[in-house]
Structures are given as C-alpha cells and as structure tokens.
Image (cartoon, rainbow, N blue to C red; front, side, top):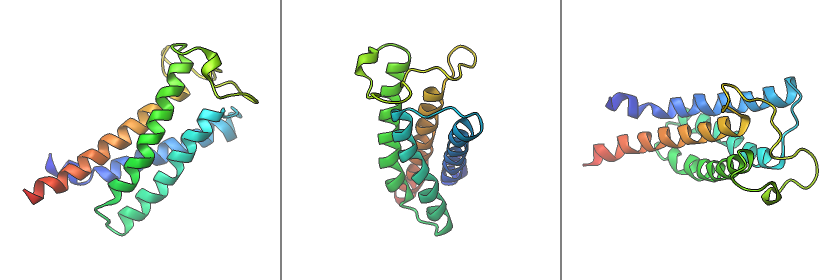
Length: 142
C-alpha cells in the first residue's frame, strides 16, 4: 500500500490529463460552449497537467504544494457550480451574464453525472492523490 501512495502523483497526472482532454472533447468535438464557471475550472485544471508533468519529470517531491492550491480553488469553483446546476442555489446567484448559462444541461449520464460533477470529481481525486503522495513522504520522516 505504501508503494501505491508513493506513486499516487502518477494517478493524479492521469486524472488531470483525462479532465483536460474531456473538457476539450466537450467543447471542440461536441461543440458544447463552456460557461464562465467552466472557464474558471479550466484555468485551474490545465496548469495542473503541466505542473505535474514537470514535477514528475524532475522528481520534485514538493509538487503536491503547487497542485494543492490550484486543485483547491478548482474544487471550490466546481462545488459552487454544482450548487447552481442542481438548483440548490438560485440561478440569480450565477455569474453568467452573457453567453451560456452555468445551469445549461449538456449531458446527464445515469441521472446525475454532469459536466460540473465530472469537474468536481476530477479535482477531488487529484487532491486525494496529492494528499496520499505527501503522506508517503511524511511517514518516511517519522
């Protein structure tokens, strides 16, 4: 199990790449226009791919520090987006003034898997893997 924790940054990288490619697929192939909150989440997700890639290449043990900030911001935006999407917050609380509404439903797999849900899941998994990665080094110091 410790070996899995030690290499969990690879899993975070895979999730980040999949999230980036998925968002590009939705917008460039399926032609779903991203809303304002989707753009903000992309702003947090896309650099994570580069940061993790460089961190893995240079074997930077502190890479979790850089990813954690962007991942936390992205997760918070995604959480807010999901609250709007599932009508827990009123649509008047949405920052979408022009363009696509943040509550527009493009996909809904199995009745609950939506684009904002996928984004939140991706950020949560990345943060979980980064915590596992960090803990693998903290245990060695004990």
